[in-house]
Image 1 (tube, rainbow, N blue to C red):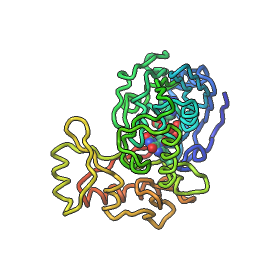
Image 2: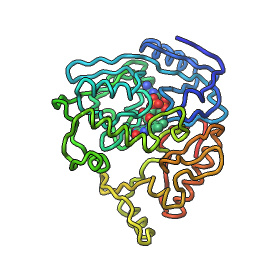
Image 3: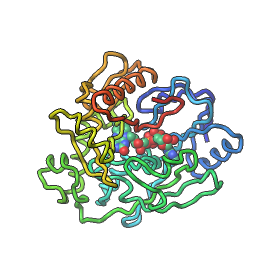
Length: 346
Ligand SMILES: Cc1cc2nc3c(=O)[nH]c(=O)nc-3n(C[C@H](O)[C@H](O)[C@H](O)COP(=O)(O)OP(=O)(O)OC[C@H]3O[C@@H](n4cnc5c(N)ncnc54)[C@H](O)[C@@H]3O)c2cc1C
């Protein structure tokens, strides 16, 4: 277990923003993770769990407590059953499942970050989300002081949400278990229209597994959604806002303000409608590359707020507030941030 004092956190985030942690602990085994959490909890020390730092906005003042970097490793495949240690790099794990000829997470190729963070916001893209394949999550329950196994139902997954996100200081994910599918080298059925169009198939068809993953990687790269240290469009936290899910009443009020525009609309649970945050941002006047300061919208995607190299967290938040307020003024819809804020708020 490595322990550093007054350690910079910015290099550990994909935005490369935020001040130092008073203490930074790097744990490489489950026992070290649990020991570090127990020690911090016993001392009443604030604790920040850190995976790949790809969904974090850390304040310029940093974190006055212990940041625990989870760097455990483990990729255990038994037939179609996969168990990943929390610190495994998610994108690498996906590539290995595709290489092994197994379907289930191929459309999640290229998503940055750690395996242990995937259940936290029920990571999803291109019509697939981890809730579809996770069977169990092994976690340290800080309230009970013991390691527990949560079933898929107990994880309470929904769109970019879960029990772990709802109760952020309770669970430390140690291992994630998946049930993948052996579809004889074929992918899961294609669900997302853009992917189907690119592949020249209709939704519901299966395609070659590696082709599916490669297609998603190419689509993601075109939107700056695959990490590239040379490309500032990827110095982001991915999508900065979640897609708004509107009740029937909210949707009617929204539709009344569209003045001839046709907004994307997808059915969501409980009679709600999901619309597109990227579309709202664009139509509110914040087009690709918007901004003149050190933080701007990505030149490839309106939904990514980026650090052009010399930004501070306050610069990024000022841009985020401008976009959120502009969308509210134009459409009456409140955008909600997807990344986790540490020591700051929108
Ligand atoms: C370019 C880019 C593209 C992206 N595209 C997508 C996308 O397509 N779909 C999508 O869903 N997300 C996307 N994201 C967001 C991000 O990659 C995911 O949310 C990812 O799962 C975060 O993993 P991480 O390890 O980096 O988490 P971190 O940023 O380190 O942490 C995120 C949150 O999870 C908590 N956490 C981390 N590890 C654990 C653990 N072991 N146990 C409990 N809590 C933990 C942290 O405390 C924090 O609250 C993208 C991000 C970037 C930068």
